[in-house]
Image (cartoon, rainbow, N blue to C red; front, top):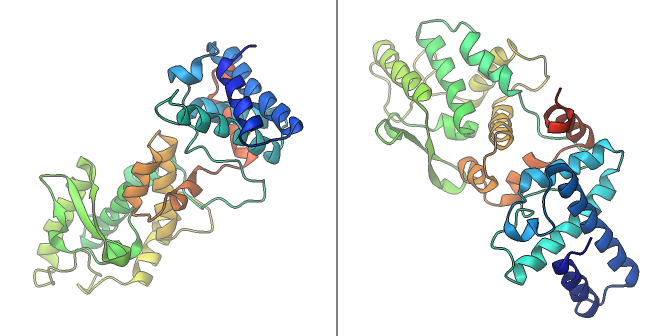
Length: 304
């Protein structure tokens, strides 16, 4: 297979980076393997990288295919590194406008612990099938869970919400995060309807409650962390047997669901209020076992 940009890339490594012949051979093999996979699986032409046909999903599919073939995490990481270097060269030379490899993370070894999260179908079950009581406590609890799952906000951000933080017209809610940084989070119709229901029952039950506290305890006092921990543990116990059932798990759940459904990494970063992209990228890390399972379930060649 003749791939002209690849030859230019290897010459760049040879003459400008002074890479050894052995290293150049490895880079060539890795990039050609990637091309071969794209050609065989997706019938892409050799110029697919330059035309922009290749995206993040294709790269992850390639990695999953290698994992299923028995290739270890360290070898997959090395091959991915070669392809990433090739992409950087193409962008440096002006041959591509965007680098789809930028957000693709190397697989971690099987012992690496991913953030704990609740499966999306379990959260849907909780919010649609579990019977919340129709009184102040039940409506408040469901509203809190809806907001956690929809926005991924932190526990401290939820507790500090004020009644005027909600913008029903713009469909947003204003939160104050770390370092007193304020950001607006989008809300869907379900969350807005739930908030409206809560505000009505809040006014009826605790008409004299302070406006600077959106959520209140059963007695009309300010929320506190332990109260919310007990709340999330109680309701998550209805749909999962996982040991961790705290508010931070719901934050992990939101991030994982968004990325699994195709959200861009930078968008998730802004939503969660992360200072650096590295904090968000942890949700893209997969164990070899998880990649294998995903590949077997979703790849076109494995569908019956």
